[in-house]
Image 1 (tube, rainbow, N blue to C red):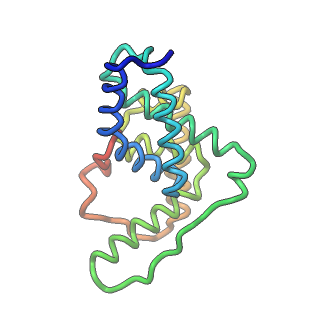
Image 2 (image 1 turned 120 degrees about the vertical axis):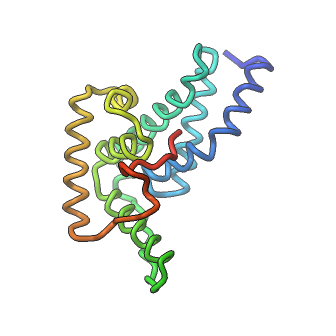
Image 3 (image 1 turned 90 degrees about the vertical axis):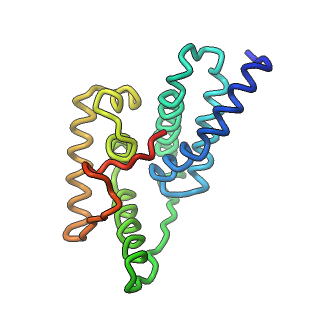
Length: 182
């Protein structure tokens, strides 16, 4: 069902406001800006297709988040996506604090990329977006127990990969949750 003019304006306004946030979350999930742009586009296409079914416009962020996660998980199941992965190399570290902070983030990002897709998405939802267990379960379409186990396994894997790397960052708020949610 095509959008009427009023729906088109509402969608355009939402797209303009949310595109950057959704793209950043997509990048955290997949680790590649080009792939993140594709995932973001897929999420917004799905939103546009279902715009007429959205009754609660306050829930648009959750709807787009779910579209983004499902698009990512579907893409990771493709054979060619599993064979081809691009990784940025760590930059040479300098002595200043800014380069150390960037290096810490890159080390953490590289460790996050080594997790299976489901664990990675679970950790991004729980700690990057600050969702609780129930919201994460709804976004992933799984049980709360699955979210808890995927979170525990993902954190254990991160600890194993990171080993003794010190990721303490004064810019991370108390509780470790970033405030960049969709």
